[in-house]
Structures are given as C-alpha cells and as structure tokens.
Image (cartoon, rainbow, N blue to C red; front, side, top):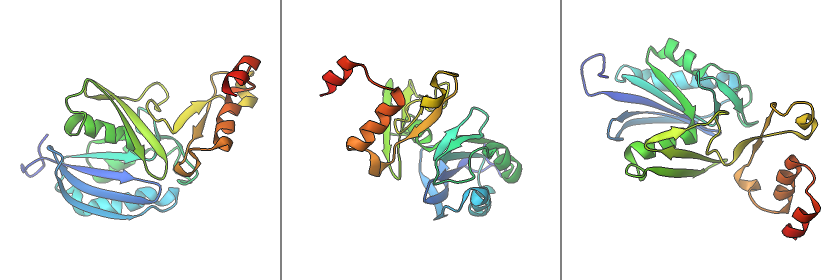
Length: 213
C-alpha cells in the first residue's frame, strides 16, 4: 500500500502502555522516522490522547497499527484490561481509529505486536518458531510460528503474565466462564504469588503436595 501522496509508504505505529502512550512513523524496514510520547491518562481519555498524538503524523501514513497493554479480540475491541487502564475494557479501538484517522487499522496486544515485528524484521526473522517475552510494567509474551503471531482462542496465547483461569466460584457452575490472572513484575516471585496461582487450580492432591515439598 502506498501513501495518499504517492510517497514512500509509512505506518503510523501507536503503543498504548500502562504508563505512557507513544506514536511514530515507521518504514517497511522498521526504521523509525518520527516519534512522539505522553503519559497514559485514564481509560475514557486514552483514545483522545492517541488521536492528539497521531494527527500530526497521519497525513504521511498509509496504515495504522496499535499495540495496547490489554487483551484484544479479533475485531479490534479491548476484551479485558488491567486495573492500571481503568475504563479501557470494552473500547472499540479499531473502529474508533479507522473513523477518526481514516486509515486501515490493526489492533493487537502490545506483546503480540512486538512479536509480529520481531518475526518480520527482528531477531526472529529467520526462525520457524519463536517465543517473545516482554518485561515492563507487567509481564507479557507472544508465540510466533513461521512469521505469524498465534493469538489463540482467548487472545492470550503466549501472554505468560496474562492468562485465562477458572475462578473457584465458577468452576463447578460453568467451566467455560473464565477470568484473568495478571502477573505484574513486582509480584513475579515469592511464596505468596505461588499460593495465589495454586489457589486458582483448587486444592492439590496429597501426592502433589508431597512432590512440591
């Protein structure tokens, strides 16, 4: 795809993190042409902040890619978000971006976007399979197979710090209903965290407890 003015095609890249939002113009070889950033506001104001950053760049872009610290469904909606992005869950990020920026838009989890970039132009470019692990405010990841990111049925494939788990209250009533276990960097280690994870699996059998001792 070429730019509207016939120039070198550029992509408008947006990174929505838990603490900052960045926007830039990226060439096909991964070169960053221009870069802007600001602090992340509360959920209802996130899209407005993204568009404010993007407007000075959009005229030179042919497409838009948005990576966000959330679970994203196949339609580009925010399926779930952490408590650090209050009010962000349920947002139709793809639809809003295409209407406002008038650019074809893809929305992915930020670590899935990093995995796609790594498979296309990074260290995983020549690898048949790759696992990307990202350590930031939270812990995330992506699984790449033959140059493509596999997001999985729930949209969390590879997201090692953000996985769907059955809640104890709903386990017997409906095994299809899940909630998410989010691992943040400061909670990654220690017995308290391990107990929290084991709690989602229910009481362990006696032989399991002996094996863990």
